[in-house]
Length: 243
Image 1 (tube, rainbow, N blue to C red):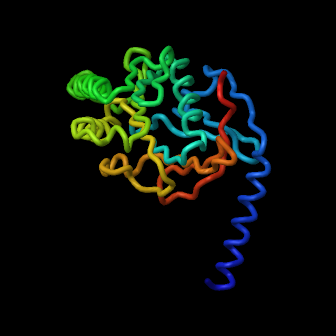
Image 2: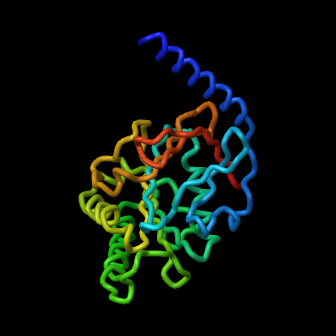
């Protein structure tokens, strides 16, 4: 490593240390109905070190946006997902569906599944609705959510566990590939910290998904996010778990 590269690396580590210190205290979450900005299609997930709100996109001018959450156990990804589902439940333009073997957020998610068989049923229903939207000649314009045609977010928690089923993978692949145009956002949770598509989902759609990484087990809720794997990531911290 050259001296210039070493100095740049040292400066980067110093900045990360300072930002982590500024994010030492967990803040309470704002009301769920205030988290989604319908004008920009983004949802607040926490705050940056400078106190500004950290946001990730749910939809944009091209349609639905997929999300890949990569985490270490105990780093706070479940809390982050809880906040996302609560926000989507509170917004008339979004409808959360959740399949998660560790808890499917009943009462907030419109559809839930914990067992593998129920996950397949949920995904079959989602793909059926997706195909119906794509086949509707009255919906020939670019997708934009409405109360009658809300953005449907499909959260698949613990993807390494769920992806052992071939049909589950195939249905998720179809949502990743075609969901953008029909208002279906796929949200995959994997374990690890490498920015790469969660295999076996390797479609172009998910390869360019928004990235969130939760890595700090000693500081739960601390993570980074970037609009795509090649973009610079920013440090943020999500809010305290809701009781």
